[in-house]
Length: 592
Image (tube, rainbow, N blue to C red; front, side, top):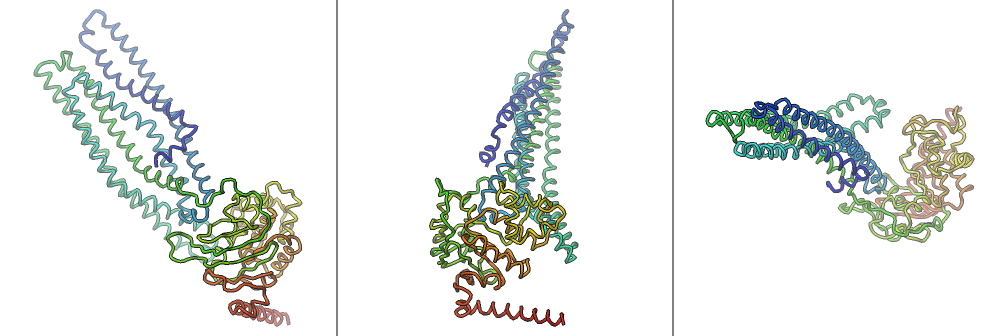
């Protein structure tokens, strides 16, 4: 995990290395100062004739060391901030870019809310831990080591007190961490649930308000927030024991040193042949430094405990193997829009017991218009997602232009297979900017041409700003039908060899639907068109119609053939025709 995360340090290696160097200098200066102070107030030196020069000499040295320590600490803070902020920036960059490479199968393993949490909260926790590691986690062992060495140089017999106390302290620390870690694991999962609640509520705020479900959503959010609070409270209660335990041991150590040192003064008047008061004072100072280092280490360790779980979640995303990648030297040209499915079976995961698609054998000629009908859950969308390799077939092959889709360069294949997905998505920006997702270099006349094909030009021109009209996030300021037509126009701008409409005209009226289909036949006859629909009227003029049921093709033919041979198609047709007749008669009656 650590190795995976540290790959994101990259250009910030230099400040990451410089920071510990300055911390080393600061720790060395701070540990040297108590010893020099004890030398400055040495009674022998003060009793001599050159007392003032002795004080001035050590005073200047102490001032110099204090200045070096201050400068080193400030520079260490500066470089630590550069390193940690840069590291976090790279980490977010790497996570985001990795997610962009994910196939649909990879994305299915992580919820959207979980990915958002990992890109924000988790990265922030790791950033803070990294900064503390460069500063305090480096400083603490150095300060501890220097203080121990200086303590032993003053009086080895009393310095052993620190050697005895420190392992006990660390024993308490590791016990606390061991108890707290499971809480943090649960907390991060509950953060995902909390973010998911917020995301669903904000994304579906119109539905929430239209069904007057604000109170329900509040209750759901409060429950998720309360669960996070409860686990955090339990964890913090345990962590809170750390400070009083550390303080207790600091005071105990200082008391024991003061007692034994004072006893030595009374018994012999000396500790090591020098004047006792100065050495005892220095020893107590070093003792406080040693135990303060342990306290700081405990604070770092608590932060590291939180960041370990955050780092694990981040590395999960970074280490996730992208299961759909471009082959080396992939084919760069798609010859035509012909499609062939050869003995294709598909399931969403290896562990799944049931195939979503099975026994798919199908051939579509370039330029044909193919309709796809089937009930909810019949895997209509799944079928078309295999063509641009949004998923890979579990068994069998899918060929486009006579070539296995796995042999194409992925970008080339997806440029030639335009998919207007079931859930239409527009991004914040002008209509022009949204359309140019299809071709960023498209001219204005190209935008108008595809919008006319998609029957979008008329309503765009009705806006005061026309093609410069700003689309709000998610396309909330245009209707469902308008959004669908803009998405179709965006797909057409790519001039694909295969155009797939996944129930993409469901929000437009029958007349507009017919105009869109007629425009396709007249203007892009060489493009293979696959139309998934719920209405027979949307596909009855197609060259061939696929009927899916339970992930299998149960019928394949044109409208007339299916009326003769397919009971399912005939039932759908009769039901929808009857419904249309009733509506037409009702309309005539209302008119009379």
